Every structure is written in structure tokens, then in C-alpha cells.
Amino acid sequence: MTTTLTGADIGARLTRLRQAAPLVHSLTNYVAMNSAANVLLAVGASPAMVHAREEAAEFAALADAVLINIGTLSPHWVEAMVEAATSAGEHQTPWVLDPVAVGATAYRRESAARLLDLRPSVIRGNASEIIALAEDSLGGRGVDSTAASDDAVQAAVALARRQEGLVAVTGEVDLVTDGRRLVRVPGGHPLMPRVTALGCALSGVVAAFLAADQDPLVATCAALACYGEAGSRAGRTAQGPGSFAVAFIDALHQLNPETLLRREPLAIESLD
Image: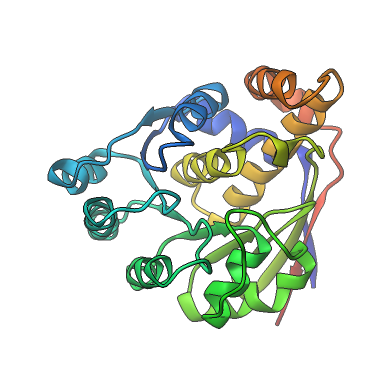
């Protein structure tokens, strides 16, 4: 059985997000902080880059959504992440795990395992990261994906079922699954991987959409579709990675429901 998610549906989610202006508590890496904050502002959310262990749990309780990104780990940050995720769970606040380069080192695998035990609402990673999480293997080098999104379909479905949550695999064509349904989300531009932290910033956008919607799968698809649409539009005028970064922020800010109406509907495929 297949249903669809139309451009109008996506636009309605974007409107809802901007009306809510959710506060997104972002425990993200040093490289991504500035970019992630600007992206969240452009889409219509309110970013807070709070990572001190002494206040992480308290701030997570105040936020509308939480993002945890393991890109630049340290013992103090890991404990802050665990406490923020625990607080989010206690307050039924949606939170997103971005398992950056999780297959690269034992420390990353151990830290990610602790966070997975706290049941993130959404796990957002590239194909290599999702495969590494699903198989507990040494897949992935640095933050780059060595596999295509379609290579991670089985791993994503298995991980979503194991976690009883949502998994988003981003790449040339994004995949979203809750273990029962699967959606492919096209869009974006080849220059996007050439701009550091755009993937990390996307995880924050997913968190923002989760805060403003009751269906995590639909919210995640809407976030990826809006991000991809902004990337496509930015790529039409960009001359290279530098101008693309500026054009992308502008395109995300200028995105509106009318511009999304022309998108092809996304098929929501049942896996049952």
C-alpha cells in the first residue's frame, strides 16, 4: 500500500514550524555551531547552542526539540549529551541523534551506544553511519559517506525496528523509515557536500520540524524536502561552495508553501 505526501502537505508543515518558532537545543560540534544556528534561523526556528554539562539537562527540559551531534566528542560533552537526552525523554521532547563518523573509533561507537539506549526520536546520518550503527561495524571514514543511500535501506529499516524510532539516511536521494514505512526524498545539489556542516545543520532542521508536528515520519520528510528544495534553488546561482553557502541560507529563508506546491509528491511505501 502506498500513500503520498504532496508539496502542499510539506508547505503546511513549513508554515506550522514558522508559526511555532520552536526552540531547538543543539549540542552540536565546534565546526557546525555557526552554520547550524544560521540555518535554524533561516528556516524559522530558534537555536540555542548549549552544551555545558551543568545546564544541559535543565535546558533540554525548556526546549521544544533537542539535537545531539557527536562530531567533536570529549568526556564532558558526552555526559552533557547523555543528560540532555535523558531529560528530553523524561519530558517527552523529540530529539535527534546525528552519529557523525560513528564507525571511525571505539569511543564514538561507545558514546553512540549510550545515546541509542535513550531512544532518539530520529537518527539522521549518511549511509555509512547508518550501516555502522545497524551492524556495529567499522563502516565509514571521517564524516564522508562511502556508501550510497540505497545501500543502507536494509540497515535503516533494521535499525528503525530495533530502536522503535525513525531513521533518515541522507545522500543523493534521502531515505526515511520507521521500520514500517519507507520514503525516498529527492532534491539537493552536488555542491551541498562541499560546504562543511550542512549535514549537521540539517539534523537541527529535522528537530525543528519534529517539534511542530505529531507524525515524526511526515515531519522528517518535510524537513528533508525543504532542505533539498533550498539546495536546488541555491545551486542555480552559485559559482562554487562559497557562494553556495550564502545562497543556501537565502533560499531556505525565502522558501514558502507556494514554491513547494510544484514538488512531485513523495510516495510513502508500506513495508508490511
